Length: 215
Ligand SMILES: Cc1cc2nc3c(=O)[nH]c(=O)nc-3n(C[C@H](O)[C@H](O)[C@H](O)COP(=O)(O)O)c2cc1C
Image 1 (cartoon, protein in one colour):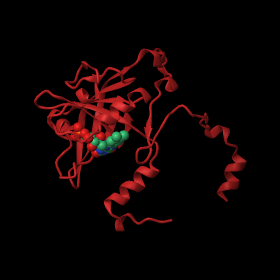
Image 2 (image 1 turned 60 degrees about the vertical axis):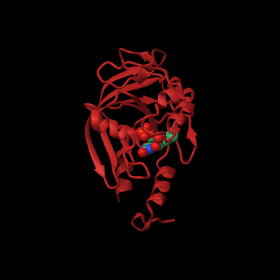
Image 3 (image 1 turned 90 degrees about the vertical axis):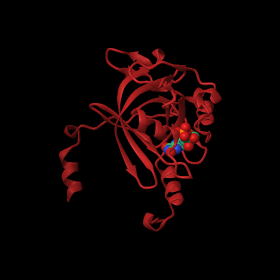
Image 4 (image 1 turned 180 degrees about the vertical axis):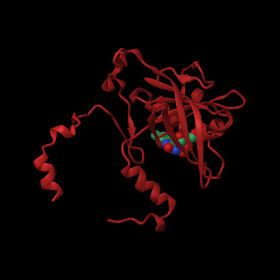
């Protein structure tokens, strides 16, 4: 079936995107407001975009009334945020933090999140998160309807010790990390069902097959 996005409602495009770009990693983002209050909220329009320097991206839509979400407003004002990766143990608290609270309500308090100081940014990280990334905003692209796409440079990674297999060679235990991903609606996925697919070097792809397939 074909869908022409130029003829669809935004909500229909949203459903197409979240049902086909799956699974999406989840950034559980902590920020600090101008009053010092800590805000926490999950975002699955999130990914890694570069590594020199390490760059992540967040897609922050506006509230239905057009106001910026607290995360977007705080990043706009302070230029700092922390991305905390969500494992199964953190899933419920992440979900509580997605409730549409007014700015004066603290999600970390409502969700019972323990916070710990960051090194170089004002927002704290979530103590029970397996991985946290201290980020500084590089640029915000403002799309229509107050949507903010934020690119941030990762200044520090905090990785729980049991996930680090070999710090010298930067080997990490992805299964132990146990990150969850978002599918559509309220459906999530685990990351423990995996298979290996080795990269094929061009020298190992025989020349006869190349010429046959190019004919
Ligand atoms: C798993 C999950 C992923 C979400 N992803 C996004 C997203 O990518 N962009 C967005 O604007 N809202 C997303 N939301 C909704 C926000 O988390 C929600 O609007 C939250 O209340 C925003 O909080 P804030 O105003 O404190 O920033 C997501 C919610 C959940 C549960």
